[in-house]
Length: 440
Image 1 (cartoon, rainbow, N blue to C red):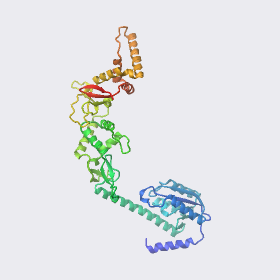
Image 2 (image 1 turned 30 degrees about the horizontal axis):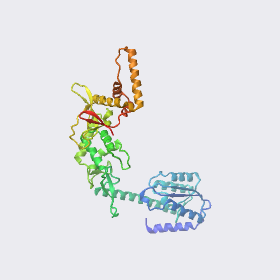
Image 3 (image 1 turned 135 degrees about the vertical axis):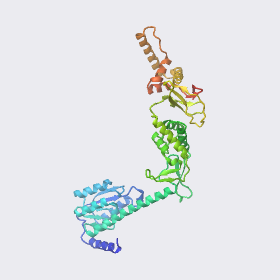
Image 4 (image 1 turned 180 degrees about the vertical axis):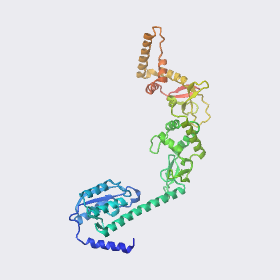
């Protein structure tokens, strides 16, 4: 806008301010706002706005009947609760004037600005009073109000462009905006604070991320990897357990081999300047392996005893697998996952029937340590034997305690299994194809 025209409008406003004021009939609402976004960090705080405007109200004897304040950006239309209530109260006649620090506190978008001007045209909004200007239902004053608010919108639009330009430049320099994924962290030189933060490897979590990909490549499923690493101590930056969904997002993130897309889904790829945790070949192998699990309906079979054992040779976990022999018979066996670093571990597998038999013997030997379990076994075994005598006859073969324990371990509920297994104190190991117990 030409400077001469702007000065002329402001001069006319000076003349209008010398006319009789509207303060006698005006009912003011003091409105204070501060954006919650970082682009307005230098704006006066809400407390400062209230203090200054209340001082003006006292000096000029303004009738302030209500105070509204909120921390919300004015970039978008209709998102400010307090402002929307203010507009409704003006439309209903409860308020007919506004006291605020500056026009941009009221509007930084065309929609909200239009609602203010419409209320002025209808005669429901008599005056907008700021710390240095008055705006009434006067063509020049309304025109200047629209210019000032439009200027604020222009600043927002230009700021958005500048931010996008800066983010693009950052990506071209090899740094993805925002917080880096698990396994990396931001580092800033504590001596030279003028230097920008850099993305560096997190020595606490990066080894776990590397193991994730290695274990999947070696044949472990995503759920198995999650369980193993949780036991080893993998935690988020806030010290919480890493959920399975987050682990699958890690598997899909190309950031770990040195490339990233920004914004996500845009198709704009950049080469990072940070140190990769894995190679691109490892990322591809791991994702191909995960696709294989998806095709084979992974997760349809739950192997309850996988979490109980460790390999007695290399200390790795033990996982269950279901196989079908050449005659079509299915069987389950447990084997070492080889995730502990010794990839050539030759520990023998164990069939589930033999595993349950071994555990049942241990529970039978230790049942007296748990009174509730011991009484339950005695009660149920006695009941079953009595039923057999009544149905089969006095010569019916009685079942033993270990027979009943094996029945629960094989077909009981998870609660019953857990109740029985708590009798065993110590760590179970798979060694030489046998189940061994090492007490703590």
